[in-house]
Length: 194
Image (cartoon, rainbow, N blue to C red; front, side):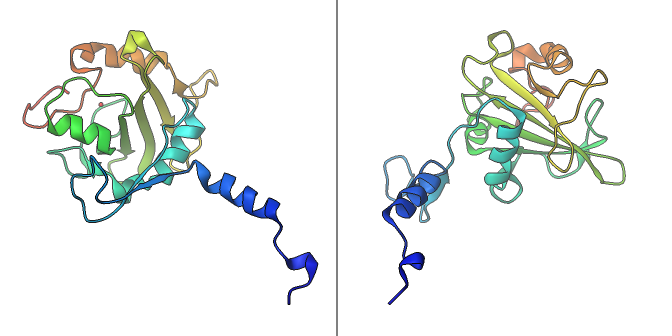
């Protein structure tokens, strides 16, 4: 028999349930809309529009292991400034489905993670675009972040954290307004498309 000091209290169980409660939902393989998949799939809640929340979201999703590369592009494809000389772009399931179905406009919840590399393939930065309804109507509701490889937010020369409605990102991506502000070539379309 355990001493009373080691016996879990009902409050411990409540705390455990609350701590685990909103992190992810597991869908049974035979749930409607599961497409008959043989394995369960985790669905994470949408992140807030802060750089810290976006970073926690993509790390919690283990994007490198669980997300797909942008269709028709491999790792270390040629990039341009202000991104790295070499790029690797990952997309969450929402974005992937839109790309594969030929949609021009990304749906709510789409997340695009672009790893920006130096010529020697050293990771320099990670830039993220996240589509959050109502967040940024003038720029198709895109939220932008730029993280250093350790996850901290990069800062502009004037000390502004690189998260949110970033003037430099918005000004550059405005040139691709017709492609939902995305530069990366769309599958089967060649040029145009983060």
